[in-house]
Length: 247
Image (cartoon, rainbow, N blue to C red):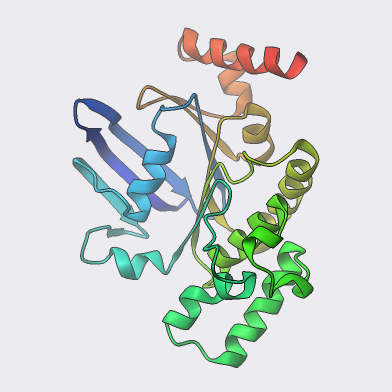
């Protein structure tokens, strides 16, 4: 299977601490790869490296065979959608303006933007009646749908989701999980999805990548992780999540 994104021996340090030790990872085209692990394990750093918000200290990241550099990252970002926890919407812009921000910057025509916007409203189940509302006038679930529309506006080849549902209440989160999974399948989307929740990782993940202390500990299916743990941490992490679910 073809990899859309590949990391080869990629590492990142902040002052005296390693956020990511030399790491190798591939994101397969049309599949959802879920990064899971405790806080501070390097999940979000890995996404920030791919989108170019931080630069690696070593190693190489390639996108569709092209090495990502400071010289081409602006162009490549147009092919990557990025959603963070709580959406990251601009509070002074309406939902419509947030979604259309990059399309307007790139000079897309009004008719093209209007058609795409209506497609995205239908895709994400977001009422076009709410497009003139500001983020503070929207619920948490609605804000995340707007963030997703903004990320999908340019029909990206890769979608990066950094705990996009973490701040939502359980009922809203469950509804969005279902809708997101349907969207991924419908679009044949390649996704890198960060979460700390094992149930969510199982629900979304074609491949689960468990991280700890800046390293990939084990990757594969949940069956592999559960029945053939690479080390005691894998079993400890899975069992801890089970205990939380049962309390």
